[in-house]
Amino acid sequence: MRTTTPRRWRSGTEPATARSDLKLRYLLSLVFTPLFALATVGFAIWAAASPAYGAPSRGTLTGFAVACGLLTLFAVVDLMVVIRRRRTEL
Image (cartoon, rainbow, N blue to C red; front, side, top):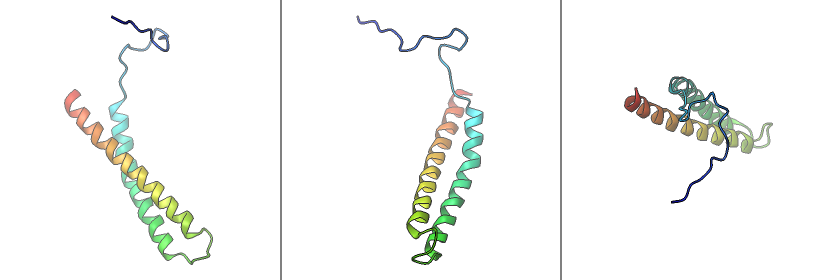
């Protein structure tokens, strides 16, 4: 049987099996999911209404809309994971 050494030694005060703070993750996901969703819609509408050669350009606004959309997706997935873990662990 092969034994492995840990990559990093513990400092001595943290628990051996540390867990994330589910309440904080829940709160952050709950706050930022609608915020990123509104930002996605806002940037998409702004990009659609902007002139072709305006400043900021349509491409920049579309990029911001896509980035906010990805952040919305990430926040929703994290919210679902946190809800599932809180049901099983608490």
